[in-house]
Amino acid sequence: MPCQVTAAATATLIVLAMTSLQPAQAADPSLSSAPAARIVNVTGDSAPGWLPSTDQAQAASAALMAYLAAKDAGHADVAYAMLEEDNSALQPFADFARDLATFNGRAGNVAERRIVAVTWTKDPAQAPKPGIYAAMDIVSRFANIDRYCGYVVVYQPPAGGPFRVGREEANFMTNADAATIERQQSSAAVEAAWSQLSARCPNYPGQSPPASSAPLPEQPNAIGYPTVAAALIDLRSRPGVAFKAENGWTIATDKASSTIWVFASEGQAAYPAAIKRQFAADGHGGTKLEMSVLCEASKADCDSLVRTFEALNARMTAELRGRK
Image (cartoon, rainbow, N blue to C red; front, side, top):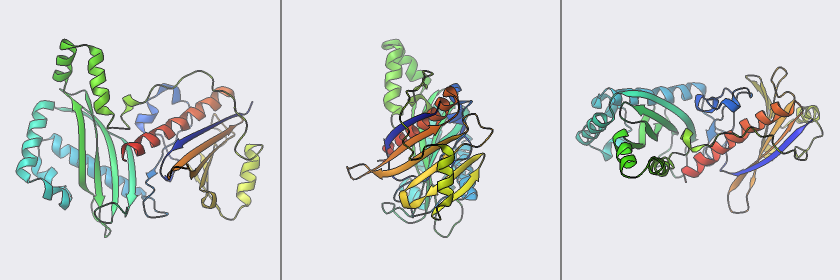
């Protein structure tokens, strides 16, 4: 039986590209059998029509991981050389090196560094200068710190060149501090304190509740077509709709209506299915993302598909709210 679910979330304009699921998103067992998808987030004040290239995405991630590796190894001089000039002007090397040594002494050896989300923008009006910015949300673990989240913004000037670190924020609780809170109060107090800290990290995995396995309620068809096939046929007939295929998905972008369509392909569990995502004014000076799904596969596979996209929408919304 076809399954259709409508969802809405308030967000600024985001450009989506469906590729492979990020590790943090694939970790939820309830989503492991769903079709894979990755979102590229681009802020609403970014240069119109711009998307980061594959090379830029790889270069930004490589710059971040090299910076973190230098810090974790205690190479303050190497890490400091990776700072963008405006950033280094705000903190003398002596202060940077002292703070790094203090943190490394408390944290102990690194156990994990992981990027959980990336938000891109080019030439934003509110930025100190033009260029490409990538805000990279990270989670980490150390010998003495199990709770750590934050973000690093890397910057590339208009002329190109390497990405450099423009801003950094970290939120963490040492295991010793957690033990003290638990001893003096309770384990619930530890989690409450960490919840307050990690609220500054909208993409911290612990902030997302596990997906329910209960069947989703049926909703009327709201994609504007009676079937998935009818939607594909009509959209392909429109000259203003651009199609592309990525990793088993068929993606149709209709700029005139601010709509992105994603179609499952034959061989995927939820085939045939159409996901319609449209941006519209929310009546309060912002933009909302409305999602409708028409799925003609089994109820279980359709529900899994919907939960995958609802989780992606929730992560987008949380991340953008955290940057306001």
